[in-house]
Length: 102
Length: 259
Image 1: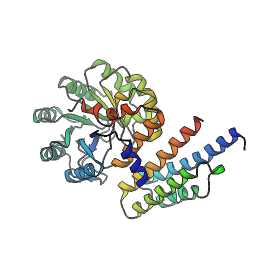
Image 2: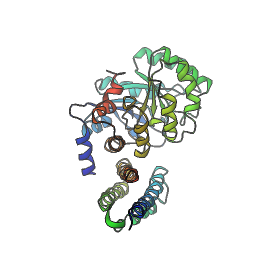
Image 3: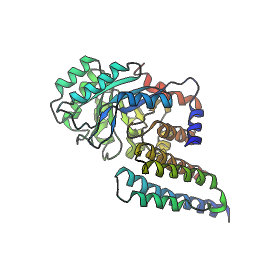
Image 4: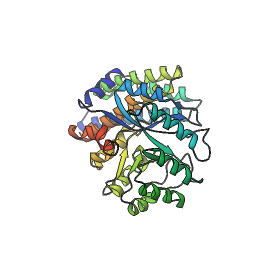
């Protein structure tokens, strides 16, 4: 991949995941009956390697945080679950911002 | 979360006594609740030394909010070194008596929530109340976060009319964060508090405003200390905020008002 294309597809992949996290976090805040489905979509979007493998370390961190978040939510600990999801979302968005800066 | 929390602890400069500028004690109509002991436990676990605390949108609030305000005052009396007590009012109702009672009692600030109490920031009763706070030299924390639709335009005339008013913009005016930094940049008595704001919003805040105007908050029980500390520290890091500014964000900027 050319350098510009490489950055673009990495960004595209991460922005996709960011959208699914938005859905899931909003579903948690609004106590949507579909919250588990939304979290499952986040899990799905995080599967596999990143384009070129360059963001794999980040994805591994996100998978761990989302897994913890789902577990806490299932146990009824919304407070901690939301913290995990918010931290995952923050790590992702700041990674995208840094990527845009070359 | 262990690796993230380790990063947060390493980022907090040695010797900094973290000051949380936004937390709640009491109960909310949405079912959330926090006790003084619960708050202290969370602070101890995260090594946070002091927190501004005020009532939630309490289902048992009488018209004047005196019951929930008393809960906060009792928490302060129990833990005077840990809590900075703010009282809460409903600007729609007759607030003069409760305002006077709380100022007389020694409350150190006022909390207003335009979404929960359904008012606009340029409502004449709100403008009057902010003027009373300025006259009493009482800091005011205004919810300027989730569900807000108008912040800067209705608030700016009051800030300009009362430059002495010490104002904390709760949640950093997140939907209008860039516009707010422009509007309030020269109003040095306006602080931007960071609780439960997304790191991308905080990145924009940190890129646009002197860090001496930013203060950390958690919004317990809606936020938690590890994730909210991570948000501001990670955003500041990405924005290139110098390490020497972190003690101000985490403690000293708000501590100037509550030494």
